[in-house]
Length: 593
Image (spheres, rainbow, N blue to C red):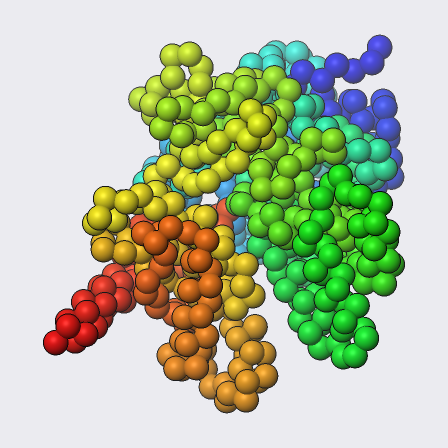
């Protein structure tokens, strides 16, 4: 009898029966590939489940995992869920106070940690907790319990796992995911088996025939990549984990993936590197390169024969090399987490590497909408997936309803009631519109729109995305709440800036000094003016400051999914911001004197 998938762990039996393979899940750890066949993976999961039962865990127990992407992450995930326990992912980059809050709030009793650094971080936290938490490590760490002890013990146990599996219903909680958000205390999002099963089943429209290998590097701690990995397992796609962002180029060349998921910033960096190489070309090669890029910028999915004829030439002469840089086998790239520049999407499509942009939140398991073959519109995040409704509220907020909506926030009925209304509509906090009544276009975060002193509303994300089209801009935040005009904090791309300075014959000293160099400031003034042209006068950035240090997760300015923590950035740079507006006032007074 064919396996019916109603709970996420049903994926394992489904794979064993339908398409067992030698390379089911593989990870590159300390420079070496560790590979699991479907059978070995399932056997390891079962042994660990029995090991967890052996230490007293069962339905509704709470187990956390703090680790970068690697096969052990998935093994623990399945081992936890098939005994009915809740899996709680922790970002490796989380601050100790956030880890402490989550462990206490979720009443966690067991944690799996990847390595020595994360083990030490956990031990510091556990020392402050009143309850005793067992910690197991994947790597061998002096003085730590290794997870292999649980596996060995589980292999000797005879617990009937079907008795545990049969108790688990589709509506039962699978995971508690704590969203850091850009403000406040983390909230535990309760997602069920049904949420995730329906999400990967209905997101499968993303992956056409021919998809066989998926490379994963976005954090599994985030629901986007976790759902994508379940989707790979559902569609007979082997999963490979890159070792780190530092090894990503070598890992892509080794795996030669047919699909990977990413955030727009990575695609921007790939594009910038290719463009730098293009600028270094001379003569006819340079001419052909830039002719191809200009052609790609005009790409439409439905194009005439003459455009397609020219595109065929461009693909052979130029874009084939772009494809080879990403392994040469790409059929689909999935983009999420932030807005993708439509120009960049067109260029990748023209290069025969279609990028599908989607949209969702942790609370929506995560996919609400996604572009896919036969249903794509540039500049939008696609139509809603089957079983999910989308509508726009009177104030422009995007509302969603369907199988993907969370069970609620853990022990926060008040917040759940604020977010999901009596008719079951989830309020996303994003502002958007439905193009042609079908394709969702996100314009900004509701909470991030600010009002100037003149009473005009400004949506900062759209302006920031325009700025980031320039290779010299690495990060930017537009601000101006109750101010006379919008201003911006800009972190230059110092690698690109160094190349620009060399070309202009400007001596490069340090990043901090270059951020004050009059030539650099003048160049950024031009960028600011050019980027603001398509916006209304009240939206245009009038003043800016260049910052010498990049914002980061560790620095506290970014969330784990790389969103700006605006309040933190405003607080850390309040003196610079006050100077921007004071200088503008002084300039005005001098002008009128």
